[in-house]
Amino acid sequence: MIHTLQTIVNDDWLLDDVITLGSEDWVRISFDHFSHDYHRFIYKIIHCNADWSPSDLFEVDYMDGFNGQPIEDYENSLNTTMLYTHYRLDLPNENIQFKVSGNYKVEIYKDDDENDSDTPVAIACFRIVEPRVALNASVTANTDTDTYQSHQQVSFTINYNSNEVINPTTEFKPYIYQNNRTDNAVSDLKPTYESPGHLEYTHNRSLIFPAGNEYRRFEIINMHYATQGVDKITYYAPYYHAELLADYPRRNYSFDQDHDGRYLIRYNLAEHNDTEADYMFVHFSLEMPPLSGGKFYLSGEFTYNDFTPPFQATYNETSKSYETTVMLKQGAYDFLYLWVPDGTTSGHTGPSAGNFYETENEYQIYIYHRPFGGRYDKLVGTQQIKFTQEQ
Image (cartoon, rainbow, N blue to C red; front, side, top):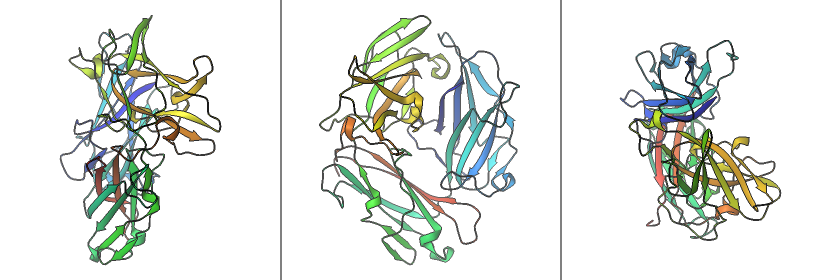
């Protein structure tokens, strides 16, 4: 089973998953497999459209090299209660070079008789940009629905070479994310104003986001004593368990130096975190009355921003809390409790954390371009902006 799948650009865990075409940028995809036995993993790179569906390009159109190659960089864990092998894949590499911009999926397959070769065991995603437009973006708490209360509104302009674009309103496809969350991402936008070489997206209600609250944080960087956000650490053979301090619904803005949902693998006594950090069972609890009509899920980069059963919190009548347990590798983690109403796919911060305009959210803007007659969506511009209280 695959755990701790990460995609890190230029060895900097705080960067978004974007590299520049033709530059010296690189992306590392890494994961752990719970065994010290060697298992052969191969990878397949797929070029995707802006919505992450496979594009119409052939393999030879978007890369030099061939799919189905093995991941040959691997190393066993050292002195850990959970035995695992750590695998690493750097892209581009001597076998693979990229030709075009856009979204890319890397499907990882376990290449042995026990695995269905048509089913990937993990999928990692990243983007390649070829800068062709200029972006000017801003975010404010003075929105078209309220003023310095519970929302934030994004505005941006695209400046492009009008000689290369026939119909800008249909050729450009903006995608906007809040803290890299996929559940409330915004697309299918139409510009508010248009002039030659210029598209403006302002006063657009689709770009108003509930502000939420700062991410909650905890650190499991040592198995012998409790650190930030941890009540106690206990060893129940054969594994360690970390019980986090109980969480409660927030009724006010709570400032914290969070990392907007990211996490960093770290063991404070290790020389090599990738192979010396251990795994432990982390116990989460949100103490509050039960709610009907939906479910609570953990959200953060470590959940892959998916609302899946391993990250669902269920109500415990005895403790009067929503609880869940997740096996995590030692490190520092950000997370939210998101309420997902039945029949919907978007999470809400209100029931667990409220919505406060002061929240220092990050917003990622990606501009795709499919020229008239084009076969794929080029990624031609990116920008990250952050709302701060000084604004």
